[in-house]
Image (tube, rainbow, N blue to C red; front, side):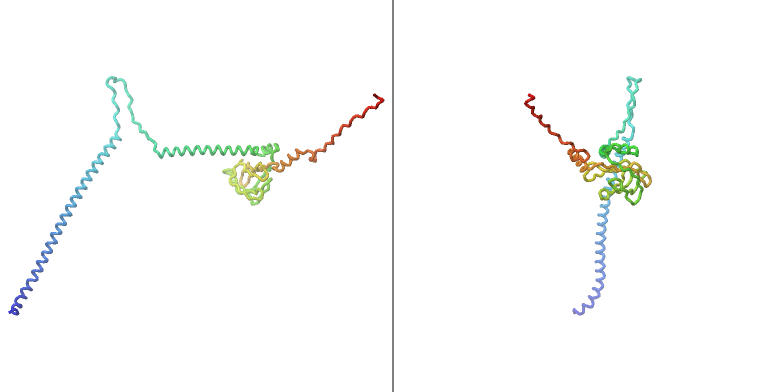
Length: 287
């Protein structure tokens, strides 16, 4: 009997399977549609909230802009001048005008203070430089600016002077206690670059200005040797070298010779002092 029911049940089951599948698919689609509807409502509410917040922010910005504009108009608008009093209509008062006072900032004050300090330091440097030049002039006994003044200095007899004319060459020229060579002569700015040999030592002196003494101290000497340029032309300089006449050892020898005149060959030896002899005794017949 059971075997006879199987052929009748199978067709019914086969027909019910598509219906059940359709019901399942429809239920799933309905659930998805409900979910999407809820999501859309949530997004719509969020958009409405954000729009309300943006509107509130815009209204606040508009209020702030209006206040700023009012403040700027109040600052730029000219203030009315005070009216003349009714009691004295003939007396006129001057119209008061508001002056704009520009107060210096902290940066401007610092800059002015720094500028004043730099100016003061520059004046001190110039004064010190002038003092050094005057001190050099006093030590050297004077600076000759031409040949006539050089002769006047030489007549003092305190120093030896060696006048020179040097062209721009690669050869050194001996002048007094040192050798000179002209490396560069700037006629526009009136300075020269020199190479020197002092006591077998090579020295370089750049930017020697006109009438600027260049000093060197030699061993066993308290006074400096000076090089002075008093004329600068194209590839040529003219000047002089000034050196002390005597060194320290020579002065010491001269002072010792002056203290001992007997050893000086130029002075004749003084004769010895004769002793005074006693007088002879008188004879008895003369008493």
